[in-house]
Length: 401
Image (cartoon, rainbow, N blue to C red; front, side):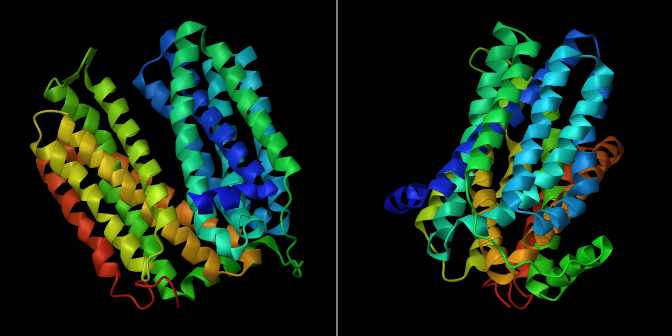
């Protein structure tokens, strides 16, 4: 805790930390308001899924370009402009809450996020001195997890008590606060390298990854983990809860269990951030790969549990492991990649991990209809050995070439 207090003494990091909390809270309020608006307008699951898919399509489609521009411009400028774009988007939907406008807004929100995420990850290296990097990155994860819990609570409360329009206004306020705080912070200036054509700079980012076999192996592991374990769990959790008629206190049905399971995942992520802050492993790659293993308990719990409690516990443990692995990866990447190319590498990771997610979601549904849920869950659990196999790649054990 003393280390955390030391990091927060730095004004720029304190501003970044607060801005992330506001941004993530707003980012959770916005889709809640979109979904409730569509439901109240009489739209079904297909329309809701189509609208929400626009965010992922934009994020994957533009993340590489976002990474290049985050390396070309000051990161705080890219981040602040992204948040101002989200302010305009949220206010527009508050005034014109039609399904078409919301679909376009969600897509444009994903576009803004495609520029924001790589800039944020690279900005950590220019804001944090190396001696504070581990603590600062862990504190950033605490901010992200805390903001998600705050946003989920506020979004639900505002929509129910006032209406979706008020939630859109609240989201725009959060994005505006985030933009202001980011603009006020200062980051270390990087040497200005000679600029090259856009596609050449994209290829530079790819070369940074493939020149380090350990880094390529980790990105492949994260992509497979997301596609073969996380995606099937997202599809089969509400279906399993509904099939067994699980209940939780006064809450009934799969939707309540789904939301509570994701809350357990976020709480686990918060715990994982604190663990990573307090502990510096001698072999961070081993720690990260082993930390991914607990997510295999989630499909196993869906396969064997007759009450929701084991599922909650497994999601909590999975959240701890995911956050520890993510923090070790970010620390290793920032230490290995030159600062002027870090945003491009971060965007490559996002594209690899998120780009396969829709495939995992669709294939899960097809396979469940074809062979049933049990074989899919078994294969998903067995996929957990992939991170352990990756430790055989040179450099993975220490996240260092």
